Every structure is written in C-alpha cells, then in structure tokens.
Amino acid sequence: MSGQLKEVRNRIKSIQSTQQITKAMKMVSAAKLRRAQDAILQMRPYAEKLQEMLQNIVSNTEGDFDMALAANRQVEKVLIVVISSDRGLCGAYNSNLIKLAKQTIREKYAAQFAKGHVEVLPIGKKAWEHFTKNGYKVNESFWNLFSHLSFDAVKAAAAVALDGFVKGEYDAVDIIYSEFKNAATQRFKLEQFLPIAKVENEGNKGRKADFIYEPEKDVLVAELMPKILNTQFFKAVLDAHASEHGARMTAMDKATDNAGELLRSLKIEYNRARQAAITTELTEIVSGAAALMG
Image (cartoon, rainbow, N blue to C red):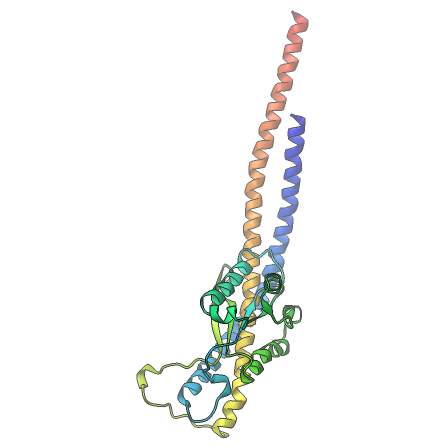
C-alpha cells in the first residue's frame, strides 16, 4: 500500500511540474500573440486593397502590353510555398498545413509531381524537416526565416518565386499558410500567388475600367507589380506568425486544463488509497489488541 501511495505522489508532482510549464508557455505565447496580432491587423487592410487594385489593373489591361507576372502558361513546373512554424507544441497547426500541402500536390499537381517538377519552398523548420525527410524537391534557402523575421528577409524569399516565374523556372506559384482569425481560430488556405489572378467585373462585362496612369501604364505596372506581390507575401507570413502563437496559446491552455483535471482525479485516488491504508492499520491494531486481551 505504501508503494502505491508513493507512486501516486510522484505522478502528482510530475503533473504539477508539467502544468507549471504549460502555464508559462501559455503566458509567453499570449505576449507574442499580441504583437503578432497587432502587426497583421494593421497590415491586412492595406495589403487587401493593394491586391484588389492589382487584380483590377491586370483584368482591365489584358492585351494592352506584356505583363510577365500575369502570364498564364501551361503548368509544367510548380513552386509551392509552405509556411509552418519553427517549433511544435501548437496542437495540429503544423500537421494541418503539411496535410493541405500534400493534398494539393496529390490532387492538383499529380502529373507535375510524377515528373519531378514540383518544388517546395518551406518557411518554418517543421515544414522543412517534413518535406526534406520525405524526399520532396526542397528549396532550403529560407526555412529559418522566422528567426530573423523582417520585410527585407521576406522580400528575398518572394524574389525566388518572382524571378523564377519570370525566367520560366516555374509556371505556377501557390502559397499554403494559415490565415489568422482569432486566438482560437485559424483558417488554412491555398492561395494562388503567380500568375496574378484576374477578376471578372460582373457589372461591366465587356467593358474596361478607365484608369488614368501616371507615368506610362507599362512603366507604372512593371514597377508596382513586384512591390504589391512582396506585400502579399509578407501578409501571408504575418498571418502564419500570428496563427502559430494563437494555436500554441490555445494548445497550452487546454494542456493546463487537462493537467488540472488529471490532478483532481489523482488526488481523489491518493486520498482513497490513504484512507484504505489507515483503515488497514486500525484494523491490525484492533485485532492485535483483541488478541492480547483474549
């Protein structure tokens, strides 16, 4: 019986230590989430408006001049950017991203993958580890980008996609990331990065919007396109960064609650075992006393 009590005490101590760690990790993630959330919420309206403007320009200038970044070609070579986290302990966050990436390759680019023409650009250690170990064609240049996250670092990663598309090294570029909604909700997205998607103007089919360009249209668009696309890429990275901290904070909160429930059940078990031990000792004492008196 004493051995059973000692085992339960050790388990209680172990779970209490784990609970302290999960509480601390939850507090750290909450602090990081606040900064990451502020960054993406300030960035998102600007980036979405730029994206809308870019799509409208591309949709209304078709055939006017050559736009290399909007060129629709037969898809032979593909680049898939997968934005994961560097660390775990964030629930199913990374596994869901990797699952979506593999599903995209299997369903959308099966023929290209069979020819070895699908390349993965992982941002985040978890995606890099998975795709490297599983034999995918991987660009390993930017997997540790979150260790020095900045617009310039993200711009360098985006340049791989932009330059590769213009040179014909890729015919399509997709980004897979988690869009931040709130601390408890992330939406895993597959987004076409290149070629730039066109939009249909339902209210004015057959008519082009009358834009006034200054300087010349081709000069302005050629200058704006890469800058707007860099901004879109940066927004995706910031979304993923905030989503990671939200997922980790939620996971650590649930882990703390689970540890509390386990502690309660173990304490009940310990008290029952202790009461049983006391009852056994009392019975032995009474039996011994009765034997001496008899």
